[in-house]
Amino acid sequence: MTIPEVVLNDGYKLPKVGLGTYQLRGGIGYHQIISAIKDGYRSIDSATNYDNEGIVGQAIRDSGVPRDQIFVSSKLPGKYHHYDDALNAIRESLARMGLDYFDFYLIHWPLPKRGLYVEAWQALVTAQKLGLIKSIGVSNFEPEHLDKIISETGVTPSVNQIEIHPYWVNDQRVKENAKRGIVTEAWSPLGRGSSALTEPIVKKLAEKYNKNAGQILLRWHIQRGIVPLPKSTNLDHQRSNLDIFDFELTNDEIKAINTLDREDGRIDGQDPNEYEEFE
Image: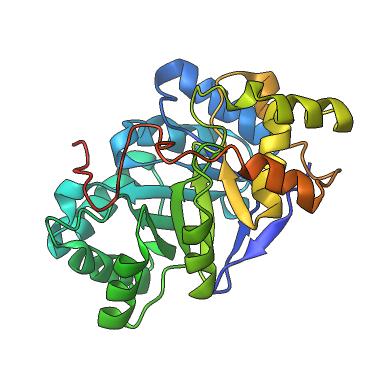
């Protein structure tokens, strides 16, 4: 299966759906990632704080798919926001993965109370110049955080990966990213164990299009211009999560799903202005 791609602001191409690897660890995780790659996934999203960079790298190397055909990403944890620490952390992550470069690398959280995210961003800019990273981006950044790193470094992130799912539609931040030429990725696009999959409107659309609820929600992301990163340990679900490019929701159906939005819809109440990242 060939997955359509979106062109980033730096010219690199990102598959329109990727595999989230949060909580995919050890031998079982290794086989789940291998299976996903064999089924057609070409964007694999990891992070230092997922504690799985080793098995992600091993799966990529053992997959039989040429390295230049897989878009590998990882993320910088908050404890390494100082410039030198960040550069060292990037090299360590590459060593754990057994790779020569990242296709994509992000700052995991801005942690504005610490006030070091500009320094961390400068380290990513340097790492890109050194050839350690192809494309650089951020995760969980608010518009003011984006403007600060852009104004102080002159470099705009290619992607901002943020929380988006039917209970946290996050439409304004998606628009703010687009205004700056930044592609939005969605973590937990199905709502991590939420009941969004059983909402009546979602079940109704699944029946109409002969799809499952997860496919409906992933298509909802795609049509909003968002790149979803679904994580599944179920191999059948992994495969079906790619089968979302042969139908199209109407504008009214997208709006209907948007009505599921909640004021308190965040999965763990993680406000990027307040959240102190786990270490």
